[in-house]
Structure formats: structure tokens, C-alpha cells
Image 1 (cartoon, helix red, strand yellow):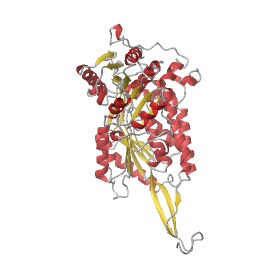
Image 2 (image 1 turned 90 degrees about the horizontal axis):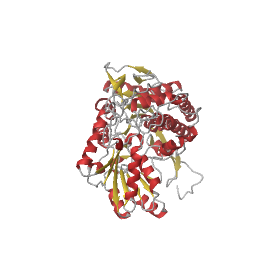
Image 3 (image 1 turned 120 degrees about the horizontal axis):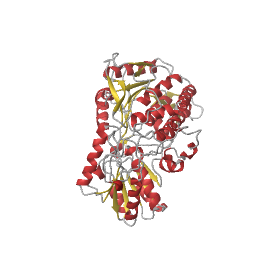
Image 4 (image 1 turned 180 degrees about the vertical axis):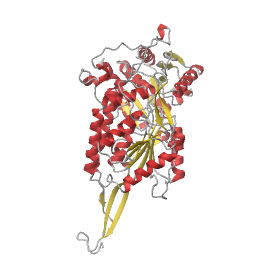
Length: 558
């Protein structure tokens, strides 16, 4: 099972999960106990509602449900709370403090004071690095608890959270801890007796809004570089998934992060999110303004965030938005391997991935063979309780997302696409959907144009490279693309021609801390991760000083 799991999800960390397969290194949920095999979806059995099983009790307690402001967990100013739900059942996990505009103001004021008066930006950069490394170590120590919270709140497989996403969170924080004392400016040669310094300085208070599909990873992508550069942070979690960020933020305080440097607001987009995006000042004039914003989410919401930021104080905004990524299978491909990778590219994380390979373009010479393998792989995908060992696909995040996906499935049927597998609800409780595959998909169908964000694979046929390049680029998205070929010339042609921010050749979802990620066109602006992630949280300042009788300039130059 470990080797099979490695083929499915190891590319996220560029390493095999087989190293975690021993009992000593397996997540604690699976240690010393037997687990019943999860249900495999098979439409040939003629059922969409397998026998109900009692959900596994998560091996973790919810201890943090308040807002984190100025180093303390506090109730919302209004006293209001909202429920966060278990997507396996739709039942309430906990009631979370509902942050609104007044709470955002309090958090920004705390972050501003921490930046202006606190030790964080004034620390020797190496000291910031030490704190971030302690933070990463504590997360590593609490790996299983954090993974359990993520699975409980989000519905993603526990194995994925525990073996891939929490370790990646640790890796990203250590990566940016390593950068903290290596950020430096330069000197520039001017045309005259001038000493010119180019300095990089933190913005101050960074506002950050993260999505529900990868709460922990998006936390790391944003908080890691912001803190390494010396900024302070006000982060709003997605209302669907507040639990893991609150737990992790408590560990940041234990690591020695000063009060006010990291503030966490749980709440809704139209209230807390809008307040953060449009924040101008608190109650002390323009001293407490929010100078920088980073957002990950849908393109439609990204437009609103950008508009609010522009209407307030023209704060720069980094946007990582939606996608409709092509996955191109060339005529020379190993079809079995291509089908497996295309399956992973689409169905990973229940299909709730901004860069999912949701338009599978297959050359006409291998289309029929590929379709048969894609159908068989979907029929054998393991769906069930995400806390159960071996499960590949858990529930969708909530009822709204479930209904949206089912709407697109109906649209595909109505539009004339051929349903090869799935297409129905899985089970009778929670937000599970059968792995769904459509063939004979046309470019003008909604399932080929819109971001579905669910387990729905659309397979399209093409004749030659010129055709597939034109069709793959015919979208307002440009986040990522996958290419499967054994021909280096074909690979080079496609990587240069496709208008996407990331091109994966014979791999997919390979996310390394050093690799920048972001989109072309309406998939966003700016890049996250790598050195580019640092640049989002640094301002450039030029300092010019006249020089008197500089030794290295002649009198003719002075």
C-alpha cells in the first residue's frame, strides 16, 4: 500500500511516501490498530449509496476557537460565533469566534504596534531565523494532531495531511527561516560622485487571506516569507477551515514569536475579509494603515479583493487565483503512466485544487486506450472516511461546493458529453461524490470552461500540436499545465507555447519550497514560494549620498 500511495502523492514533496511506511513512522492514527478496507467506487455494482459506516472519531481535541490578537486568544468583539462543520457528516465540530471589522481593526492595531514598537523587525535577522526554526520544530512535534484537525475540518485524507502537507508546512517554514539572515541590498554605480545603496525593507503590516482547500500550506506560503522579512501579519482563515491555523498559531507563540506579530481572524469574506482588504486606518489616522495584502482564492473573489484594496489605500496585492489547467497527453506517451498521472492531476485533494489538470487533452491516436484506462482508474478510486487508512478521496468541503459540482455534472450530461464513470452522490451522509469521468467533451461545454473544483475529469481529443496549443491557451486562466511526452522537442515546444505560470513535464503538482508558483492572465498576479515569495513582502528603497573627493573618480568625472 505504501508504494501505491507514493505513486499518488509523493510528487508534492518530491519524495516517496514509502519512507513513512514503517510502523514507527506511520501517523499515530494507524499505529497498533487494524482498519477495515475503505469502499471502492464501482458503478458496475449499480449502487451510489454503500452501507453506512460510523465515522471514525478523530484522535484530537479542539482547544482553540477564539481569535488570536496581540498574543492572546480572545472572543470576537460582537460575541458572535459560527459553526465549523465536519464534511463527512455535516455535523458541527465546534463554534468559532466570528471576527468582523472591529476585530480586524484591533488586529491591525496590534500588528502595527508590534512592528513600530516591538522587537520583531529590529531583531538581528538570525534571531528571527531561530524563532522560525523553533516554530517549525514544534509543528513537526505536533504533526499528527495538526493533520487530524486538518482532516476533520477539511475532509482530505489523513494520510495526505500527515505524510505530505504538515511536513511541507515544516519544510516551508525552515526554508524561509534560512532566508531571514540572507536578505540584503546592493550598491549601484551612479554617473557621478554619489554613493547609492539599494535597500530591501519590510512593508510593515501584511494582510493575508487564505483558502479552505490547503489551509496549512497556504498559511506557510504567506506567513513564512512575511515573517522572515520582518513584517507583522493579520491573517484571515477561510470560514470553512479555521481550526488548524489557530492550533499552529499557538505554537508560534510557544516558539517565541512576540505578541502582535501574528494575528489570526476567523470569519466570513463579506465582513472580515472585506474589512481586511479595504483597511485604511484604525483610530490614529494613517499611522495604522495596512500596506500590503495577499489573497488566495477564486478569481471572482480576487477581483473584489483587488478593487477594495485599490479603493482604500492602493495597497499592493498578491493574488493566487483559479485555474482550468490543461493536461496534454502526446501521441508518444506511455498511456498507462499518462492515465495514472492524469488521474492524480485531477482527483488529488478531491479535485479541490486550483491547478488541477481539469482539461485532459489526449492525442487521437491514443485516445481510446487512454479513455479505457482513465475509466478503470476512476472506478477503482478508494472513496470513504478520510481517517481510514488507504482512502484516496474524502468528502467535498461543504454542501455549497457539493451542489456546485453536481450542477456541473448535470451540465456535462445535458451538453452531450459521455459519462464514463461516477456522476452521482457517494453514500447517503456527508458531501461525498463519486469519481466522475466524461469523454467526448467539447471546448464550449461548461465542464471544459469553468473551474469545477471537484472530482470531475473532462477528456478531450486533439489531432496535432498546433491545435492543442491553441485550444489549451483559449481560456482566461493561466495557472498551470501538464505535458506527458517522451520527446524532448515536443516538450520544449509546449513549454514555450503554453501561457501558464507553471508547466510540469511528466509530473504534476510538484511543489517544492524553492519553486515559484503563480499564474498568467486571470489566474493571479505575483508569485509565491522561493525567492519570489520574499519579494512580495519587501519594499525597495534607494539611498543616495554625495561623495566629496572620491578616490576612485578622476576630476573629469566629478
